[in-house]
Image 1 (cartoon, rainbow, N blue to C red):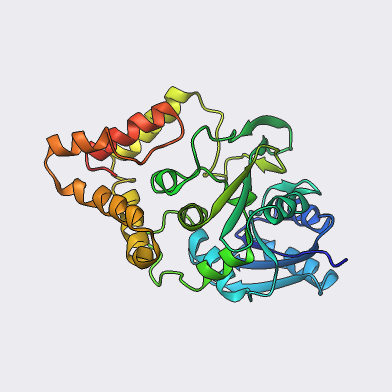
Image 2: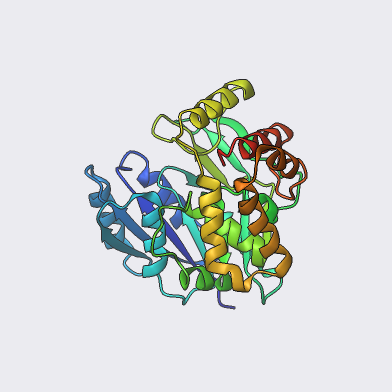
Length: 312
């Protein structure tokens, strides 16, 4: 019986310190026909030399795409553009994690149990670790609320390095990547929004990725106390760094997919954007009854607050 063909899309940037561990863990994946596409985003350290060494040793499995520095969002979308739709499943990969040997095979089994004719995406919890792979905590836990468009519009509940897509998801997103990526918050968030709107998200509580936390890792989970997290988030909103990112991404998504969305989703999305232009009283009324939600109670309160303040 033929093993499922899985393409892992890995974007690198000055990742020489940990890239060997990541690639070794990819090559150790079991029960899949593995292919790895690596795009380097203009590294200035030894990353290129290291990945070329692996490509030379595994020419049938590893393909390197050289590129200029376009940032993490552009790099992953360029990987999608340059990956032909000839595989059964597609996974995203960071440069400094370690995957358990059954990460891909477990994801494939979960995806194969889902419907065949809709976009599907697998994601999972991660085992957070320090620089030396000592275990910290598991993050994120199983979301308590549905992984629907009404969550995905205002929160990313899926970690990009755990994502595995079925072929339909990959092909549909690849065929409709916006020419201007500046209003996309992150590639994984955009894909979560797409799949939750048109298909099904499968969340696995089993951590299959050792998710390394270090000074260079500015995204993802954190061990900070909740009040430190929220102080930092509030400061970012006050300083303007996060202003309008959610509404800009929502507007772009509606622009691209309006005709494909069910009418009730169209209407709810449009109302979410329109109510921002109303007076304060109407914004308050809408914020406290809108269908969009974040998973945690405190996160949801902050969502309503930043909506009323037009910081969304």
